[in-house]
Amino acid sequence: MSFVSRGFAGRRRKTPPGRLPPGQYDVGDGFPVLSAGPTPRTALASWDFQVQGQVDGVRRWSRTQFQGLPRESVSVDLHCVTSWSKFDTRWEGVSVDTLLADVVTAAEFAVAFSDGGYTTNLPLADLTGGQAWVVDTYDGQPLEPEHGGPARLLVPHLYFWKSAKWVRGLTLTLEDEPGFWETFGYHNYGDPWREQRYAGD
Ligand SMILES: Nc1nc2c(c(=O)[nH]1)N[C@H]1C(S)=C(S)[C@@H](COP(=O)(O)O)O[C@H]1N2
Ligand SMILES: [Mo]
Image 1: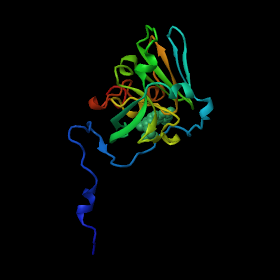
Image 2: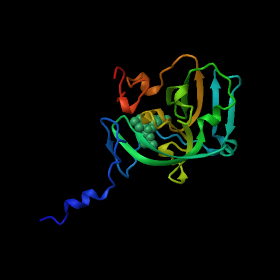
Image 3: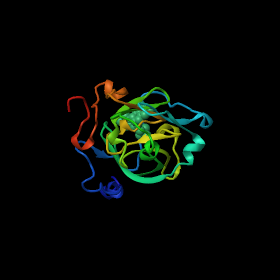
Image 4: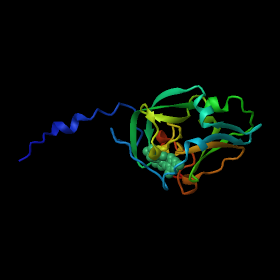
């Protein structure tokens, strides 16, 4: 005998129509943690963010300076290559447009680098135009270390591995230089709507 009616399974809100890319499922209220290594614990006092590489001068913001930059709130859907998607996630941080505002560069690519050694590459055009942020707040709270605190990159229009956790900066490059997962056979670009999971997709 079972008292559990099928109705209870339907308590989770429904997947918003048209927002689930091919091969993905809605993870609902859960927020999986996916890290290729241990969670680095960076002292907030020593955290900084740098823009380096093909630039007319390295830009560096201390934690305090970073917190003084203009901030944006965004609500976005996340799509992990392991096939979970999470809708309407709320973040706060600094637009990459703000960080690159006065940088003079001929670069067309960038490599985001993180504490712990993780890297991921993107075309510069995918980091600008209101498409990417360095976020330090999730759902109104300081970003937890497991999810990338003190700060992570957020590039929601690409698979979530492009959103480098524990990010410390961007290296602007003339040539495209594959990052961590990209060297291990994942797709170089990673558009979830074109299901670009692996090299060759
Ligand atoms: N530094 C770093 N960033 C990372 C990763 C990682 O292993 N190290 N994993 C990526 C992958 S594959 C995904 S799906 C998301 C997971 O973020 P979450 O743990 O907050 O869900 O972070 C991405 N950013
Ligand atoms: Mo992922």
